[in-house]
Length: 339
Image 1 (cartoon, rainbow, N blue to C red):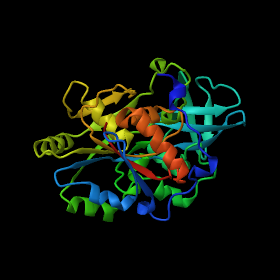
Image 2 (image 1 turned 90 degrees about the vertical axis):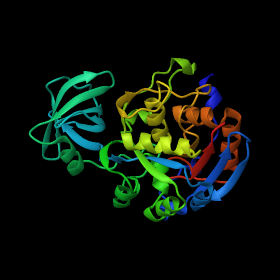
Image 3 (image 1 turned 120 degrees about the vertical axis):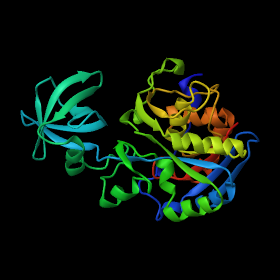
């Protein structure tokens, strides 16, 4: 398939610049990939769409304040966007500066020194001098809102660009489908007899990188770290025995589960994934997907097209535009039934 097969027209005013008044106040478009039916709902209606024996799998990664403003030792300005924390004092990051940085150069971030160690393709390996990387990022950084949110981050974003179940710091972009849930809604879902399990996938800045080739088979995915705990594997096994369904909250949870099942059955463990899901992919684990609306020509639009069917997703997105749904990270949600 070609990149142009995953394009659509989106009026710019439909790109949500702020979160809804409450986490659960978004709309929900229910799309059945098997029948092609589309239904307009409110997000809390998801409670009536899950059943006892199902397992809801969330991504419990925590977004770090990954955007840092810096000055070069020459006095020029630079911007650091963390890709991942490598260890106690080192990070991998994109750096925007007037000239490429060389090993040995230093940047000043607030009152901290950052040394350029090496370059790896589009990323730089940086070391915080005399301080812990995560602590420095939380002290000096700001919420890394996506590029299509054109305003400056505010204090509200520190809470809302994060899920209520976020635990393990390391993501530089939020697993946005999970931002529609609050504790009360999760309690109602559990009361239905649904088990809530977790995986961790630290979303990287590469999630916003455009696909630059028209032949999508030539696209190379960025790598992301994930962990699928044994408890989650056991929860999925219980759902299978009881004929429950595996519901992934977000494309990141889905990619972690499908990566962990590359050998056929989902297995617990830690790994790196470059899984690129396009139409024709055979899903092994996930049967239902909660997700937001994705950018035109993006790998995530390809993923949902693989999940629910290309034509069904095209009709669903056209419907969402016509009905003035809100798009992208702070926008509305979909519940997709696998084709």
